[in-house]
Length: 98
Image 1 (cartoon, rainbow, N blue to C red):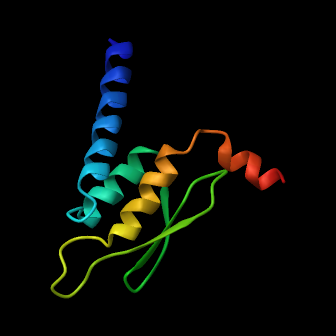
Image 2: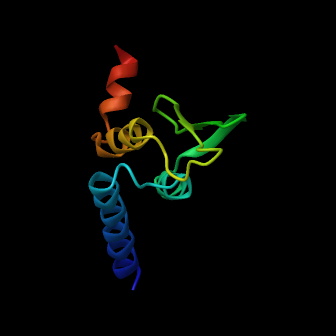
């Protein structure tokens, strides 16, 4: 049963990532936040609409929460999350050691 839950969670993460890649213009902040938290990123600080997320061994990333009449995140923020989640596990660790 545990193995089934693990594979189900992995399939969900891959599904979320593919949805991000296919719909960069229509991604809500809550979706980005949920995906980051599923991948063990933690909210480090909030300054106005700027949210900084960090994870051990990785550079922090800053996302801007849409405000005013805007409903969706900027595609550049979506690309940041995609690039961080697509990176192989050891890439960030190797870059810090150089």
